Image (tube, rainbow, N blue to C red):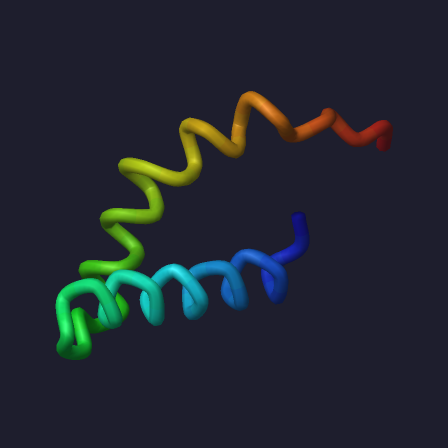
Length: 51
């Protein structure tokens, strides 16, 4: 994933969490939750890239 794609996913994750909380949770909370709950699952599905 490139940085722009990760940033977009973070913003989308923030939106979903904020909707659930019914208020803006802020980017810091979204990043913490993304690292804790999304990246471990995504890591299993990512394919290594050949360089």
